Image (cartoon, rainbow, N blue to C red; front, top):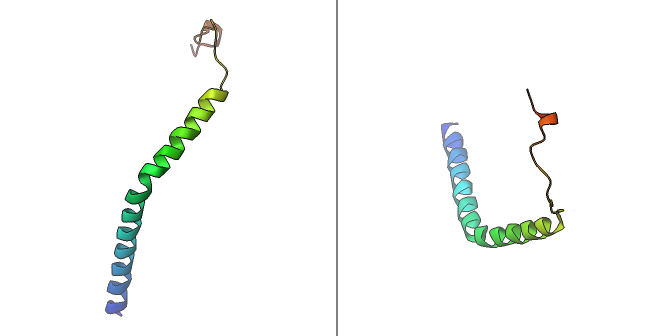
Length: 61
């Protein structure tokens, strides 16, 4: 029974190591995808022209 528990823990550790290695290998491409999506999102956002972000009417006080 103890061997099954130790084997299960060892399997979980090995899976975690493999996932970590794959994640490190894929991280640069995911960062590029995220940067491209952010550029596209920023391009779609409206630009504020002369609008004051701090309106005293909506102050928390």
